[in-house]
Length: 119
Image (cartoon, rainbow, N blue to C red; front, side, top):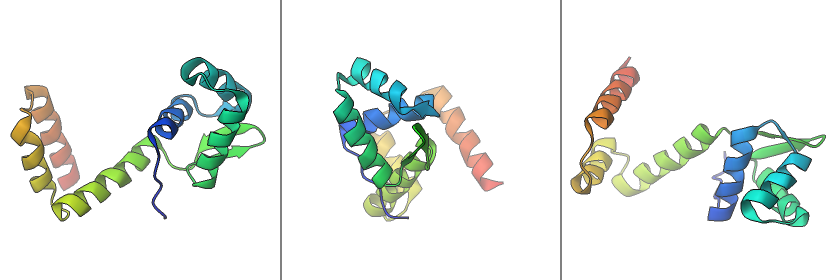
């Protein structure tokens, strides 16, 4: 799959879709007007761009995702770790935690994720 890049505004619009899908184009126009102060034409233009990128589809006026929010951000996170830390998750975590201390809850959650990934 080709890499999908989103600008900040496209990401905000994508989040609106992910939060409400399946959503009609008409409802998206109302939501974008309220949340982003967009006109109908802007909404259609950005939606068409996101559909062209392969992130969403608009079938008979109903918009759904081809890639979930979790899948999209998982791909981007993996790419970042691959490019920045030579694919080393421990190196990423070491860099991340060098400036930010983890809470007890975060440590517990990370341990659970590690255990689940090791199964």
